[in-house]
Length: 134
Image (cartoon, rainbow, N blue to C red; front, side, top):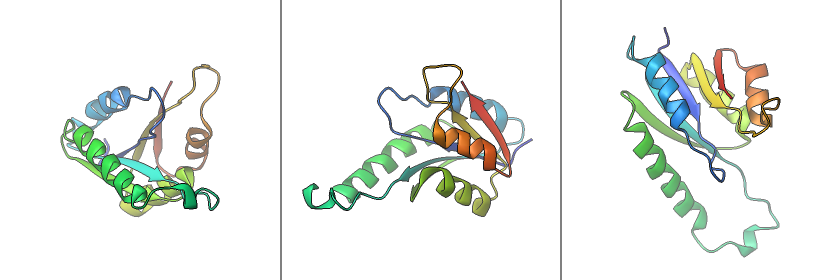
C-alpha cells in the first residue's frame, strides 16, 4: 500500500509515539514499507543564544538522534532524520523530497475537537496521504 511512511516526532511533555509506531507497523507490514521517524529542531531565538551553554545544540541533536534510533529499531525498515527549520513546512519539504507517500501523526491535544497547528498545517497541505491519530 505505502512504500515510505513518515512519522513526525515532537518532543513535548508526556508525548509518546507508541500509537504512531503501532499504526506504522500495520501499514508497513503488507508491503515492507520504509518508516522514517523525523524531528524538526527549530532555530534558537536570537535573544536566547547568549544564555545557552557551548555545544548545547549539538548535544541536543545527538540525544534526539539516539532516541529516534531506539524507536526506529522497533520498526522493520526504520530510519531517522533530524531536520532544522519550521516544523510543518520542513516536514512537508522532506516528505516530498524523499518520496513519502503517507504521513502518520498525532493530534497532540487533549481536547478531541482540536488538533495542533503543525498537524493541521500538514493535513491541509500534504500532497500524500495523512493518517491523523486522535
